Amino acid sequence: MSLRQMEYLVAVVEEASFTHAAELLGVTQSALSHQIKALEREVGGALLERLPRGVRLTPMGRAFLPHAEFAVRSARQARRAARAAAGAAGGELHIATLHAFAIGVLPEVLARWRRGHGQVCLVVHEYATGEELRERMERGVADVAVGHRPKAWQGPVVSLGEEELVVVVEPDDPLAKQESVRLAELADRDWVRCALEPMVEGRRFLDLACEQAGFTPRTGAHTEHTSTAVRLAAAGAGVLIAPAHVAAGYDCAVLPLDPPWRRELTAFSRVELTGAAASFVGLLDRRWWGRTGKGRPAAHEGEGGGRPAG
Image (cartoon, rainbow, N blue to C red; front, side, top):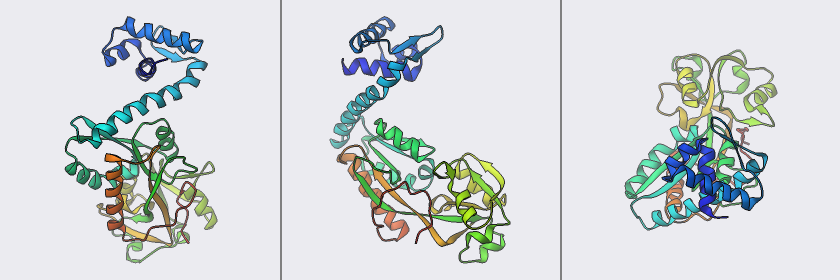
């Protein structure tokens, strides 16, 4: 089987249409169909079920697709890395990350890196959860990921520092006068909850932590994204626990938790970091330490699910 045949299969699945995939690839629909049928003959069975409107994977296709995606994206990544390392026009650096980092830590670093690599295009892939980020990186969606330490990751992992979780309230809240706050002090408050809260063994970490502190958090507002949750907390809809770098820049009061809650931040990849990817991680490392002023944490296994430090 050829890489081109696998690329055609991936395109058909992503577009859910032979017609749209053929247009995307710049080939005729008959040529595309011929290559898919040749691939199916080689693997020994149908990979796609042709429907009146669109297509869907057969059981054999579902088993085959992740490997095809890995091969296709690895080839694309190799081409991108070569062009980016040479500073060639058209080179790309693909960064995968969580939504909270895309709006918090990364924009300043991305802009600065781009100024020094004018011929290389940055492509940012944002995901809602650490599990989704890891799954997409395993399939080769990007050159490097920025997120919490992935458990038992087989490729290189660079520890960048610690992300601190803080309590966010409106500026006039009585809590704003305090230097820090204990979780138990928030037992009678309404909470702003976010769909992107970390999970631990199938449960939201905030629920577990509040349970240990002797109360159940009372939801006052619920939203999909961290940035919206910060705005709601700043407007007085309830208290919120969020990464400090996300809350920065909003008109709100931010209080450290006592004891502090921290999560390790890492950059990770499937292959050795070289060229454009290595220079980006190096810049991110320097910028992160400059922002936090914290010492490098000890490397450890685990997802970094927002547990209290210390």
